[in-house]
Image (tube, rainbow, N blue to C red; front, side):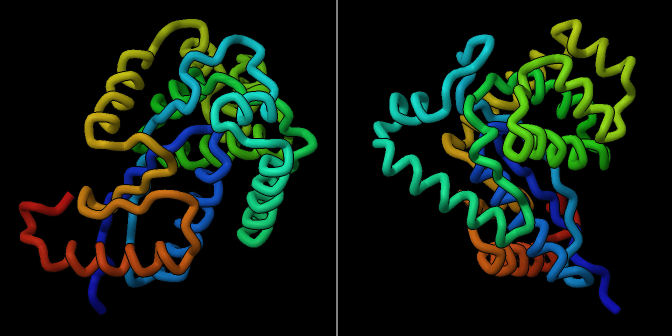
Length: 226
């Protein structure tokens, strides 16, 4: 039996992006379908949709109208589309609870603190649930402490990070890196530093892209593999 291709996946996303949830759940479903064929490590990379968002956040409908010019009917249609796509993938979007949008920088600092570990994925999923399902303020340090604990992060270490500016420079550097690579919308899913899949694509799109990336990875000289 051949060894599955070991792909590196860089998942560039924001905690406050609903299409990033759909993209991640679709990607994970695709990887599950390809178990035994493609083996992958997901690395979550930071992107802020609203880096200048102040304390307390902003009403989500007012924010979308101001930023994108969406009328109330368009906003409602988009929200229902997102809710339905999430439900198909097994994720609950509770639009009645998600009334505001918040700054996500401290959440990204916590995610960076567990980069390269399984806890990063657990924390990412927990942050998505806290915001999109439970409607919680993921810029609030008390909320972040609870979410981090639910994902298995050390409470004392979490407190140290939140009480300081630790990992701020590293997160900013990663954001600049991906912007320099032309990433200006999320989710942006980079497979083996060769293929880019953008948006909350259906599972079958990720299956096709992963298979192609796996074949290319297998053919690449060992020195070129991630």
